[in-house]
Image (cartoon, rainbow, N blue to C red; front, side):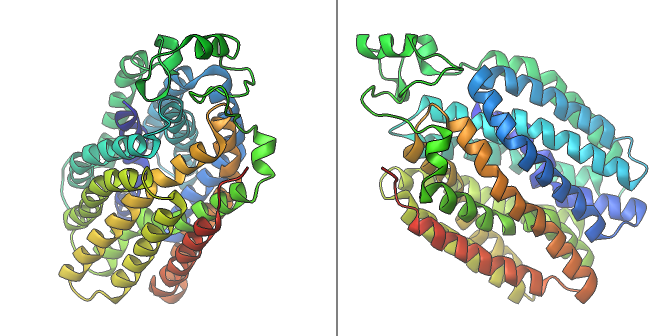
Length: 411
């Protein structure tokens, strides 16, 4: 369920962002710095709304919040289909980003963190892998549909169809969600609810501040203020931001780089995106499995370093074969680190205030992420190439891996 929700809320917006950029640049002639600003605005909104979204998820529960978020995403796609000016494009992305914040990554991972403890990273890896599996079909389909060189569905028609699909799926998907295993007489990882745990849970429902609902009443979860006083909170938040900056730049600028700068067709660009998506799908599972068996901070350093190395392969590439080597290596790093960046917070800080902690950690993350697409797009306009921007982002990516390595479990 988590994988399906993530694919509906995130893949058409973020993973296919470069495809929208290609179509809109062809339709309106906007440059990439202008279009990159749309994503930066979503990060500003995410930074402001993240703590609020985290509070609402912990207070109301993921189920209701996800339903509201999916409805908002549908509205955003309908607005995108009517875009005639740059400000309308920005507005559509802001609406969809708000919907994604409420119906996507944050509540989905809060839900998984509520349900799993021993196998937390593995569960998050499988959920992300399922979303990538759906992306394998969705991204090439979208590339065919929005290709400005062909008279297919067009970007307006594609946006309307995506809005209708999201609208139709909102109610059926959220009806299947249960906020916590305790709601159906279980504890984390499907373990039965014993008498002590049941009494503990009955006194600590969603919206209150229990000492722990982590499946072990003797273990105390961190509150938001306690988490923020630990070095681990800031090292993980900033490390997550640094290692995500290059991912956002790739999502926004890889398709324009390949199709408009290197001369490959939009469908070929879609296949490259699909290649790193397929590889990441496999390594989401690998990363989750590894993260439940070795220290997550060590695994994060390894996969983050692989991801940084892939960018240098892209910068040195001179033919399509080398581009596909980049896609595979990038998928290994991107996929392996993805479930670990979230599950490590669950391991360190527990379940009770996970939504609030994740929401607050989005503040420093989003400050970094709003810089990324503007840096790439602006340097492209100034220097005529992405080389310097992507080199800087790769270096910051490696630094983020080092920060993860120093993020030791707090007492």
